[in-house]
Image (cartoon, rainbow over all chains, first blue to last red):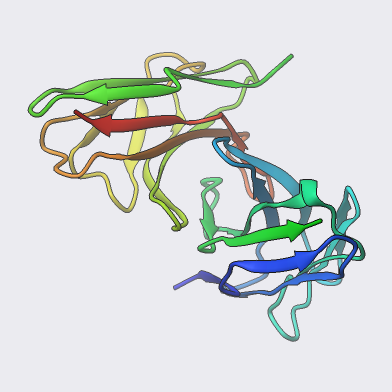
Amino acid sequence: GNSVTQMEGPVTLSEEAFLTINCTYTATGYPSLFWYVQYPGEGLQLLLKATKADDKGSNKGFEATYRKETTSFHLEKGSVQVSDSAVYFCAQHGSGNTGKLIFGQGTTLQVKP
Amino acid sequence: DGGITQSPKYLFRKEGQNVTLSCEQNLNHDAMYWYRQDPGQGLRLIYYSQIVNDFQKGDIAEGYSVSREKKESFPLTVTSAQKNPTAFYLCASSLGTANQPQHFGDGTRLSIL
């Protein structure tokens, strides 16, 4: 069945370092892909999305490109800040037209000053 | 501002007691969802509803019940049959069609006394 796999965390970086969080998916067809961010004690916020192959989603300095050849949607940021410390979830749209999403297990990012 | 409101933020349950978590949205979304999040884990779907007066079980529906009498509201009842209810519960809504992201509330943390 459809699934999403993220790199395990925690990922610990120093401020201004380059960030990559890997995400791969399995699916029939070409589902929309999403990155969400969750700050401590809060719900999830949509960070960016891509709806078709080769689309690049971007927001707040984060980017991710929909790669159908490698079935990947890796999240990147050129220079992280302490305020980026959070849990990041990759998700794909499920099959059918229900609006259901399939989430990865989440990756914790810790940025140290 | 449009959004999703979950209440209460913290909830305590005694053994053998049912408790109801509230979720209200003013985004005019057709679809609503309930997720459970355990520490260090991803989101697991409990129930979802694509339209008023209709809902479907998700992956972990046992011990939970829902209703969808109004478009804006999707309350979740955690029954005494749910033996391990301590978790963070997240409600979400969306337009319910393919490619649309889900919007999340800030969650309710349920604990057992």
